[in-house]
Image (cartoon, rainbow, N blue to C red; front, side, top):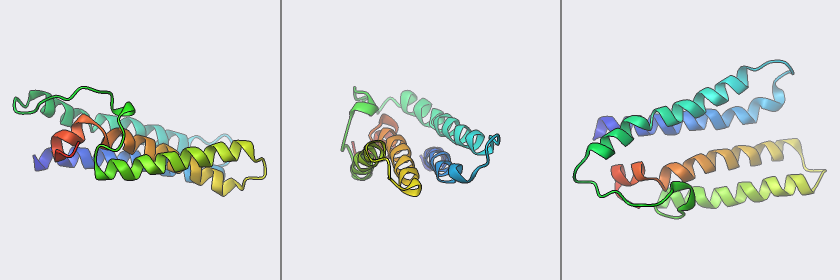
Length: 137
């Protein structure tokens, strides 16, 4: 089980890498695509690293598969509750940035980072793989 938890943790780090690139995008010059490539690489690797966990979960005869879509489940564990609250805060920050035109660039960038990372973590920590590994949902 320790080996499979490493894949889960690598997934979280990949999603973090993906989200952090958003903070540096205002600094990138036009025509460069390096940060966008890192964003998508981290995003895709985050899902790829979840595959071994899912396969292990599906093969485990002792695991009772709970129904439900992770995206629609909220507050299923302590980490999920933290990121669900951050998700709401990030969404409010983004909504305010579109309503108020004088919103500082750095605050809008922070809102996008918070929203993207908390959405990814919302799905991870409310999901079946987290339930399988840590049994909190």
